[in-house]
Image 1 (cartoon, rainbow, N blue to C red):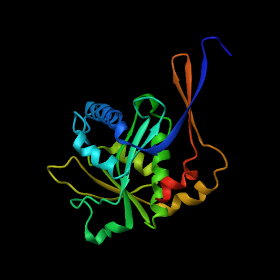
Image 2 (tube, rainbow, N blue to C red; image 1 turned 135 degrees about the horizontal axis):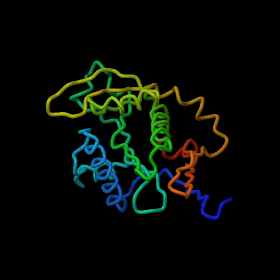
Image 3 (cartoon, rainbow, N blue to C red; image 1 turned 45 degrees about the horizontal axis):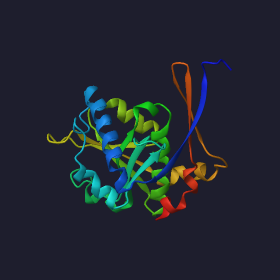
Image 4 (cartoon, rainbow, N blue to C red; image 1 turned 90 degrees about the vertical axis):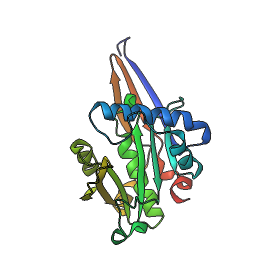
Length: 217
């Protein structure tokens, strides 16, 4: 191995966010919002979210993060039963799904599949709660993001065009579709290596399918 090449493995742990994580979660969401707005995507406020928007998610135990052992999480996701009433109607049977919010991946970890891992885990959680669907909404004018969700197993339900909302493209996936593959895991799934200059950073995600306390409670 060349002397200027590093093989580093960082283990990421999926866990519930605690009040002590608020600062790091807010920082990641702010950075992600700034990055999105720099691309012209108005999904989130350019300055991120105020603490009073995120504190309830942590207090309710529905905000999760991938912990890399540093103040800034590798990724965040909130999963709950809240269906935005401006988007999901009674005809959609809102109680049939869990809903994804605040999915963000640290840009230093981007392109490594962490978002897909979290979405798969969220689908497992929905199935464990006898919810047949996992749903989300995203920016109605962001074709790239919508393509990302399609590739992650989501189907486009419809787009709601409200002038005061940047979001409005509604997606859902069958929660049970991920179960057979998830149950076949015999080892910790590895995320491909992240390359930066001469350094190689490998990320290893703990087998989240074995975290039954997070999936079932």
